[in-house]
Image 1 (cartoon, rainbow, N blue to C red):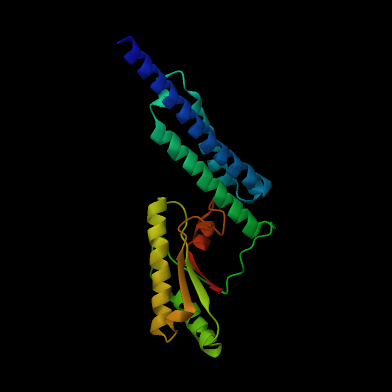
Image 2 (image 1 turned 135 degrees about the horizontal axis):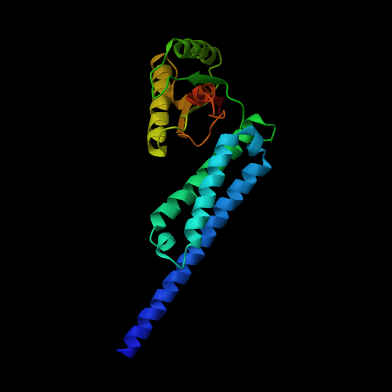
Length: 217
């Protein structure tokens, strides 16, 4: 019986030690992501996203520090959610700062941007007009190949936004295909809310993020 109790104690200690190590690694990744966004100027370029990242990081660190009581140890799912949210928001802030605030990025400029109404994948009048002009350009330059990348604004869930960005990509692809553009000239991508173009502290910022970007392949 004595050895059984000792074995259980050792196993419990080992499990706690492993969990703490994992927590530390995850928190370190989140801290690095927040720091990288700050270095890129996110506090001034995209303050809302950076503030959300910092707040999530703070709450995750608080959850992990409550090792002596039941609060932190009994909510591993909440801690993981907060850490993932901190990383996601920080990476969005970093990407947005690179796009809009003068930090160099490897991404090339979009040839065209097709914008959508809120929670919609349908082409509105201005989007259809832009695609019509793009078709003319593509037919004039038959060797041109495009990446068609769908995006969404961030107010809804990440899962929903990924689905919506995929729908938007398909909508634009279908338009191009039905207007005579060959499928082998097009590559489809979808990013959900992970590559925001504008700060969403205003309705105008959200509108800019509801888009499909068409870039030269």
